[in-house]
Length: 270
Image (cartoon, rainbow, N blue to C red):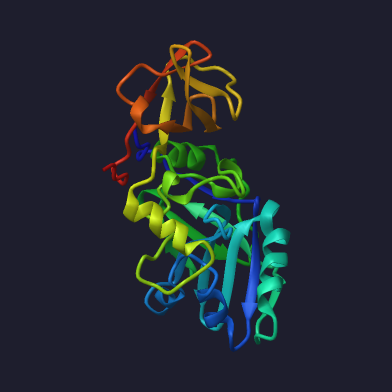
């Protein structure tokens, strides 16, 4: 149910840019993020996470390489907590961090004739992210959000739960947030164990509601009287549901209404 025929172009007003400078920034970031920072040598933007020591989600963000500038594109609601966490790890490293309010983050379904416009590193179907110091149109981003939900791609800060969500349940490896061949980072051991031992029992799926209604985040999905998951994102038509994999063969309901579970092309189920 990918919505590919409708164009979007809008500013994401909920995003904040953090500028990272200093001679130690590469080594500093490499030791704490899930993606390989060295990928910035061959591509302009990467998507990554920071995890708790227990391997649970804490932050998701993009790192953008613009010449000598390194910018972190992160949800504004998590930016101060992110800065505080980085300060803890910084110690004596030559790294400086500051919020840069001159930049805006935008998304577009088509490439723009401008600098700093890049394919979304998660999925090409999500279009392009662009970074500009000019005022970008603040059109509603409903079409972009519809595209995102139809693909089952989480907005980590909004849809996942800090210190609870397990990255592999949300397809973070398939969405290019995790590098399996890099060195250690916080939460790496438990994340790798989840992958190689096959401990994933739930996955986040895009869903379509058969009856449109004001469903609430956190509402439970059921098979009969059995709880099989919960709603994590919705616009009333589409949503993202965290569901037990064993539940997919039966009819799943929310508030007594059936849903359709969709499997996006990017998702790999063992």
